Length: 136
Image (cartoon, rainbow, N blue to C red; front, top):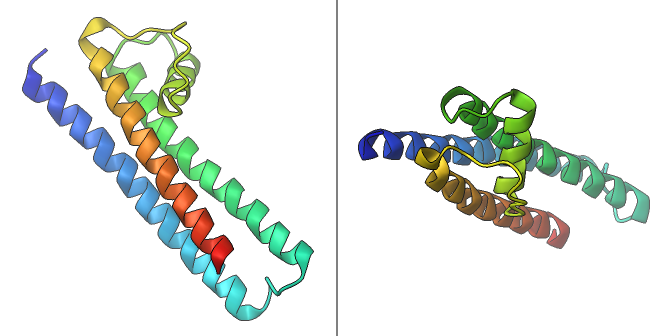
């Protein structure tokens, strides 16, 4: 496989991952601000707790969308046998757990490292977002 083609796929997947997060976090921010301004998340413990639980669910959903995009690519191009295996591999790679029980074709191995790095950055972005909301 040509290096240029590999780089194109890698850059495209990273850009898509960032786009998913930017759109997701923008929508989440609008939702949180609306909830706070409407008084739904007043200073009481339970309303605040419920808001944070919903926020974590939404952040996890954003990450699962990103994992699914990488998984679809792995199924399509990297030769993983089925979508379930591809999703599992992508999730383990994105979160940098890396069990090593599923391996990519050697031509695509470096892509897994790029997904891991993108996952670290996106998880950090989500943590920063969550901290900002909690600080508010």
